[in-house]
Image (tube, rainbow, N blue to C red; front, side):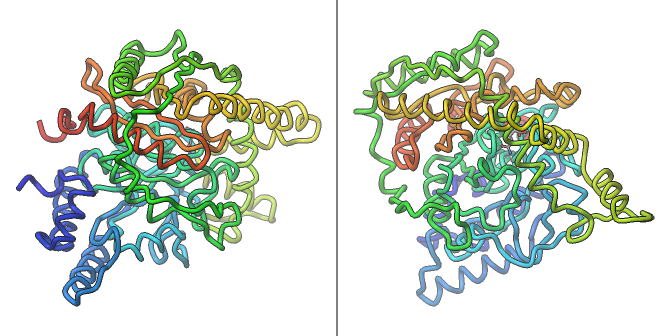
Length: 491
Ligand code: GLN
């Protein structure tokens, strides 16, 4: 048999279910792989070795008693360190939350446990999910498994790198403006940002509440479908979670591409786009045509306004959400302050990193009296225009295909001095969050330097089933996983 850790989540699941391997063996294989490559990748904030092994043994015991431990029985999964897991540190990549141990599990964690998944560890991220390279983590710098001199993308860089390096078959991330899709593209794995309201956010530490969503990374689109089926659905603890029924994502995977109309927005192929990225996406569009889809050019005319709109609304919401880290109730408190105001000031100045402080300042500014109308309110109106672009587009087409990112993974330090350059990494992804629709990044080709290129498949609200089946058809045609693997780890 091939090395266990190389298998997709779905392949590991079926071996566990047929009891050809035990859940404990699957977890041990991931742990051994993790020990071999993690010193070079640095994807994890912590690994829950003992807890994972005892969870896996409990799954094996349930099988032995003739019980069905659930649809993800025995499958290891890594969790971005922005999602609360009771009894284990949740840092959000920040010093501010250095000693924070949540008292409860996020709803997604509870659902994963009930489905038999094995919680493997917490992954590194940009501080409070602000960033596109994971360089904003207050802790280690996670490396891209395809080239250890390059970033894995962000902010869910640890989750993407852990899956790409075969340390775990599945991981959860969060996506506010691209934080699942952009690292998925940089690390050559599929990653899904779900429709706003599709997955409960109870227990997800908030960045920008009108944009944040949780979603999975997997080794295959089927892995994504299997994990989405478990975490999707309404939750009484999260009033923004929707009561839309959850379809059978796995069952619907085989629907193919044939009758679909695919829109290609001309604004997503701008002059500055890396030509290798543009060529790779155009090649896939040709393949989509060959598989029976109708591909047509469309226009999303307000695209140029997406990044400024995103950075006004996301920072405004962040400045409000992060007000809770005051040194009183949560996390880090600076010593030696003479009064309350000084204690706030010192704790927040020392606890937050540079980018988080920049966002709080920007967000406070756009919400302040006198500027509110000019920035925040205006941005809300532009958000409606962006939404209307997509409403119109989806009257014409079933799905939209774009590049995920304007370039392949960049080197460490390349964009840290210029925040605007970093912000532009999300030029194709942030709009999707403003509109609230689902989108998946699918690895489609390798660049000349041997770095993955991602393609973004975008669907209408709650259109995950259609989106996943189209992505699965493209995936089996392109066969990226079988053809390429990160050489930096196993030359
Ligand atoms: N890179 C974007 C930002 O810095 C998106 C982050 C995210 O999706 N969490 O805001």
